Amino acid sequence: MNKSLLLAVALLTAGAASAGAQSGPSPQDQMACRSDAGKFCAEHVGKPPQMNACLRENKTKLSDSCRKVVESRGG
Image 1 (tube, rainbow, N blue to C red):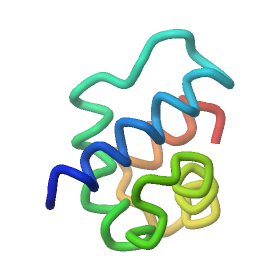
Image 2 (image 1 turned 90 degrees about the vertical axis):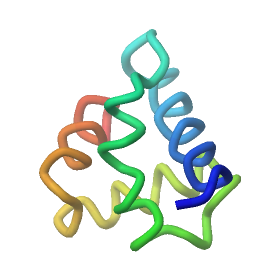
Image 3 (image 1 turned 30 degrees about the horizontal axis):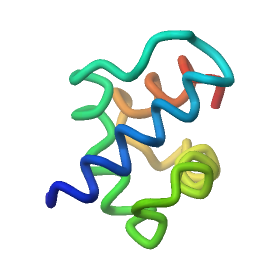
Image 4 (image 1 turned 30 degrees about the vertical axis):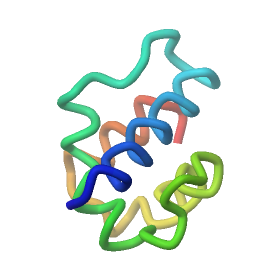
């Protein structure tokens, strides 16, 4: 994955953190969703609100680890 996708995932989880948990995404959280973000939501790279919504909409398709991150962040 490229750095912009990783940044998008970081922004995704940071945006979700403002709605839920107060801390930013951990490196583990970022890695958990990196592949899923690229697979299901690549068109939303650089758009944290849209990326967040896309991952929530695709929650049933996400890997277990990413689904847990999305759910822990209010998704």
